[in-house]
Length: 178
Image (tube, rainbow, N blue to C red; front, side):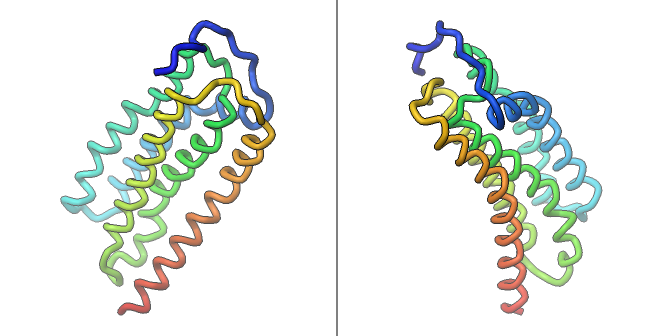
């Protein structure tokens, strides 16, 4: 772990970086809980989906770890290189929470919807792992914050479009294979 910057206070970032820092703590609890509720209420019981309960509990328990690492490193706002990953992680959990609602219509028509849901949750978990690794190793001060701000805004708006596109393509491909 890079401890060379652990003692220096950080100037707060502005704009999207400060906003993401502010709502990150609540969001990393809200989205996994929403996912567990949606899976528990809307999906038909199956051993595969019931196996997601421990994964969701793990996500809730570990959701604060990247932010805690940043606070330990004396960050007072979101380091610009991390903002895009936080947004990707948030959209991944949003997709994980909404996927059962969107896919429940096709549960009886298509095989593999359960597997598609596992892929969505796997993306959310991988985004979290990348977020933790970045929180540990990224320098808190960056040379080009404009680049990171642009990337954060792209993550905020392109991620949901990519998820909708991937869902649409997946449903079309499954429909054509029948």
